[in-house]
Structure formats: structure tokens, C-alpha cells
Amino acid sequence: MESRAVAETLEAMEASLAALASFVGHGAGTVSSTDADPLQDEADACLDGLAELAGMEARLAALKVHFAAGYADATSAIAAPASSPQERTAQEMAVTAEVACVLTVSERSAAALLAESATLTTGLPLTLSALRSGSISWQHARVLCDETSGLEPAAAAALEAHFLGPGAPFAERGCAAGELVPGRFRAKVRGWRERHHPVSIEARHGRSVKDRRLEYVPDRDGMAWLSAYVAADVAAAVWSRATEAARALQGPAESRTLAQLRTDVAASWLLGGVAEVTPSPRAQVLVTVPVFSLLGAGAEPAILDGYGPVPPSMARRLVGDGAGSFLRVLIDPRSGAPLEIGRASYRVSKAMRQWLRLRDGRCPFPGCNNHSLDNEADHLLAWAEGGGTGVSNLGQPCRKHHRLKHTTAWRPTDAARDQPPGWISPAGRSYPSEQQDWEPSHWPDHPGLAGEAPGWEPPDWTDVLDGPATFRDTGPPLAVDPLPDWAQFTAA
Image (cartoon, rainbow, N blue to C red; front, side):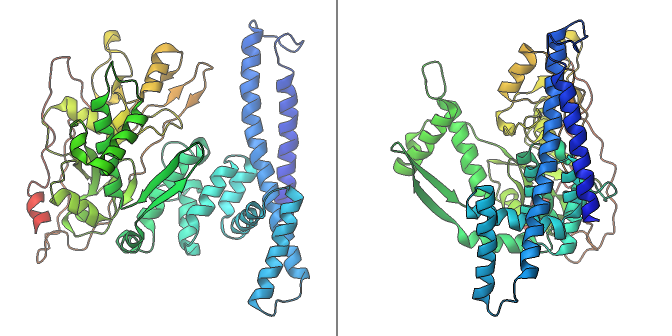
């Protein structure tokens, strides 16, 4: 079976080489260039060649995995059984050193390759198959190796099937795994892992919070790194507040960039106190909380905007304490989609902007990781051309990609209430949008407060965000809060 898979991979690479040869022949000024526009012909051929090379690189990585794992298995079978742990370690060091010398890499890199090869060949068959087919890259495969580390085989298989198995329940939505840049893919995989980890996020957070620390690392050119390992809500609040303070200092006479201002603000706080910095607007970080977790009847993680899953106790504390920098968002237990936005504002224009932050999470341009707070609401179909003001006609690109839309031929595709817009490039290629991995809640046996067992089903909450609004129309208020007494519940 393994030999046949390798043979099929080699055949696919031969076909890719033939395709690359044909793409090279489509350059401008060549005899095979028959289009009316030879330069466009060359541009298209170069893009097709890059796509073909990406697939070849993935298949080459799969072959490297095959040979690395095969060498490790063969040397293990040849060697005499180790008589002690020290002898076993020595044998592994010898194998690692051999692979490092053959590939001209460090022994640390060789050890990582051998470990990842063993994981892929023994525990992640769908990932290895996708790598062989060229549908995911080596970076994507490494993400799955990292994020399944420490999981039981059944849990690792479930995670892998969610992103790569076609028939998995609640299969990953939006972009296929290979269409997400590795950094965004890691964020989605980590989010799913946190929600489905066999050990509750409360227990894991309780252990990890004991390791909080401040680190100092000298660097070149008279610089150094100062980093803090703290709870996610603390980090998000500090980052959001420093960003808003930095924005408050921006102006025509200010030459420092936002990144420089943010750093100077944080340093000023640490060295001299908050009072020395210009007062800033109150920041708002979205906290998306499953209804039952908010009531203490469930243990599902909440979602902290810009970070990912956090323990429900953290979300309950943020909401119950009335933390001014955090905005509560409830989610529908039936679908996992956002249900309603906190009652701080009744103007739909503000609600739409917050809903866009929920729907997209970040700039919707492929691979962009710009946080939602830094993005700008924008009509997909311009208002002057008849576009309405509803979430289905709104996006929130970052400033860079907002400018890209208005100054180049890049254009967004249609959006929906729960789906951000994709993009079409000047070459006419479509790139789908990344979507949030919402899931239905796990319904507790007896939802409600202690001593109550109402056995209720959630009502059909109406949606008021997706309709059009005129230029001066503030629109209807937000949907009726399904849990009007939530503050009393959390206080209890």
C-alpha cells in the first residue's frame, strides 16, 4: 500500500513537470503564445506555474516523509534491542545525526523531521494523503502534527477528520484547509482543539496560569524583547487599551507609527504610571459566550476576539464584573452563530459594525491577520451605485486591503449575514472567504438555575441586522435579549 502511494505520487510529479514545461512555453514572444495579448498569456502561465509548483513542493515533502520514516524504521529493525534507556537514546541520536548530515541541516531540524514523519505515517493518514495529493502544504501538515500532539488517537483522528475528512460532522466551513495560509489554518485548528479537548479548558487554564511570567531577552543594535505570559483576557485588555491610547496620540504633528506609539505608551505605563499618557477612548473587546456557559450550566469555552477559546469562568468574570473594555455577545445554542450583541447601543449602525467584527473576526482578505479593531466598514457595492447598508453588503477590510479594493482591480464577492466576502483577483481568480467555525452548543440535561429544570427549547429569535437601511435611517433596535436577567444569573 505504501509503495503504491509513493508510485502514484511520483506519477503525479511527472505530470506536474509536463505541465510546467507547457507553461514555460506560453511566455510572451514564443511560438506557442497564440492569444491576442501575449503578455496576459505569459502572466496567466506564470500563475499556473506557481500553483503547479506549490503542488509539487507538497508531494516532495510527502516523499521526504516517506524516506525519513522508512530510514528510521529500517535502522530500528537492524539495530540490536537497546538494553537501557541510555542506549536507546544513543541509537536515536545516531539516526538523527545521519539524517542531519544527509540533508545538511541542524540535528534539531532533523529530529523535528523524524518526529513529524513518524506522526504522519502512523497517526495522521488523512494529512499524509492530502500532502501526497498536493492539496495541503508541508506547513499545513506540520500544523496538524503540532496541534494533535498530546491527544489520544481518537481525539487526533477527530480533529484531522474535521478539517480533511469529507464526511465529518460539522465539517470545517469556508475555505478548504489548503486554501488558508498556514497561520490562519493554525488558528482554526487550535480553536477546534480547544473546544473538543478531552480535558476541559478550565482545568488546563488552571494549570497554565501558574506559569505566568515576564521575560527579558537581549537583542542586536541596542534593543531587547520584553514579553509577558499572562491570562488571555489580561493580554487582550492591555493590548486593546495600549492601541486605543496610541490612536489618541496620532495626529498631523505626530511622526511615530501606530506600532511605535503603542510601544512607547506601554513603556510609559510600566515606568511612570498610566497618568503620564494621554487619556484614550474606552476599548471594546468582544467576548462571545455560549448561553449555558454564561449561566454556569455548561462548560463550553467562550471566544475572546483576536485570541480564540477561553475558559467560561473567565468570560463569566468579565461579564459579571462589568469590565468596561469587554462587550458581551451571546451565541445561539442551536447553531453556534452569534445571537445578539450587548445592549450598550440601540443604533443598528453600531450593531452592524460590531456584527461585522463577529462575522469576519479580522480583515477578510485571504491570509490577512489584521485584527478587527483596526479594520474599516466598507460597502461591497458602493452606496453611489445602489448598494444598501446591510451586513450582506458590508465588509471590514483593513486599511491596506481597503485601499487595494479602491485603487486596483481586486474586488470582493457577495457576502451574507454569517459569511464574509471572498475576493476576485485582477487575473480573474476567485479566492473564497474564511468562515468562523461555529458549532451548536452542547445542551445540558437541565438548563437553568440550580433547582430548576424547565426543559425548554430556545425561541425563534428574529434577525434585525440583515435588512437595508437608508442613509439617515438608524433602523430598528437590536433583537430582544432572550435572557434579560443575565446579570442576575451571573451575580448568583
